[in-house]
Length: 355
Image 1 (cartoon, rainbow, N blue to C red):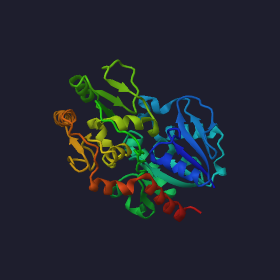
Image 2: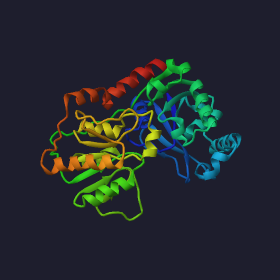
Image 3: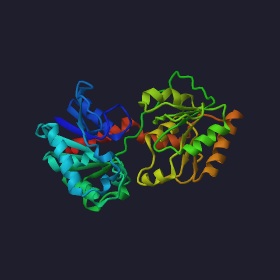
Image 4: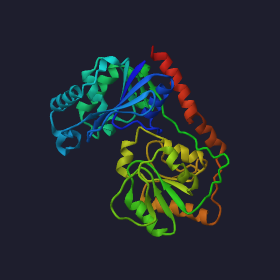
């Protein structure tokens, strides 16, 4: 079969659900066009693997980067995107199915007649950064038209009328291969995930100047302390070594960002840190509200708590009491979330709904 998979980012081998689904369908022998809708720069289409071609649609006005776009009437926004979609010259009729990820790709639904599969990665107000009713209706239209919905959100947020075709599917995590690897616990920490609480990280770095703080998933051009190292956006295999040699993982979401995560619990980066037995310092969000000794989760609600908990982690490290052991409870919790097991769930899901 031929699939068009639409996201607002390029396909990469990451733990993002839409990337896992793309790779899964490709491995099953299907032909995949992966479309980025939309880009700020003109980019050339490219073949990224035998079965996956990367396509782009260019937003020449850069509408979603104009601060006042949320004040524009909905029909103007829809008309504009319909125009650039048609101008792209993509023949949608050639595809058996179109998979749309939550967010900007939802605009494609108004110009295609294909069978739709909806990958609900984020709540709509997070994906489009607005609670505007227009966007909620945009998503609802896609949900109504979808063959089925693969949702990363908690089941309690499913729309009752569409529960029978909505399935919770978290992408899980890829375990780090630690066979024959000498894991060195040293004076370094890895900082992962979302919007970073910079004032907190700077406090840590100032207090512990002999320690390194490796930040994954962020670019920064502003001069900062020498012991804060910006590694940028890396594929999982590229930051495994940093994970393996870190003393602890820090997931310092901003308070504002945690509101956007209220429908999402354990992220892939948090799961792989647990799998490696890393102590994890994380701001309270969603269902993760209290510290859990078995899972090595230190959960804070404010900077004062964060500093106290981080001091405890450093104290254990310096006294030689910091270990990489993983409790039986944690192993049992992680087992169904290992990528291999999540792919088995996709086998069941696609075999049931795709023909």
